[in-house]
View: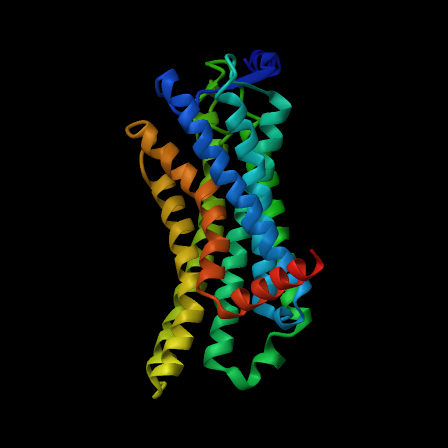
Length: 314
């Protein structure tokens, strides 16, 4: 039986990405929507990284984390969007076995990294607002580098474990993945071998990643709100809330979509699960630079300065 499972596993050379089950007439509309969203992701996140790198005033821990967040958003959306757009015009809608492995690995790496980065950003705002006099000491360049490096490290470890256990399954039931990218849950449903180990790894990783990061974010903002409410000046409270509201908006969109995705039975609501996947794979990377730039005075001033330099050169 083991040999037979292995043979069936090696026979799979590609998968079929079903995507959104809509009429062919809507493929052009969906393609244009995906294209518009992806262009906005490219412009927004590359623009944000350029502003942070070129403006010395943004050489602070908050913008160091934000620059890494833009980098992560740019790359994990690029893992998904190009292939999804190509499949709108492809009759086969296939993705190679190696391509599916790479897509799942890279997406898991960057999405987990983003979760830890958001927790680090919440801690940064906690120190900035609750202990402003010690901010420069506590949020040292060394600590910021360690937090970012740790985020990538946990992302990589989680991705290796998830990808290895997922593709250690035997895929002999079907090749059709009921999503627009290679995700572990629809791949799990294609398996004809016992997915117990893969399910336990997924559950353990979800518990280790989601719970601690959410706890850090919630506790940080409980202290932040308590501190802000003690500020006597209206202007001071407004500035503090403005600084944090953009980060809370990003956290709400990402975690809301992820929790909905993994708490909703995919078999009962397959199309809703795809919409949730779309939210955290493409909508969140598009919204992040918009939220931070529109609600951030420093970013808007740096953007005006950068555009002013370009106009002067032209």
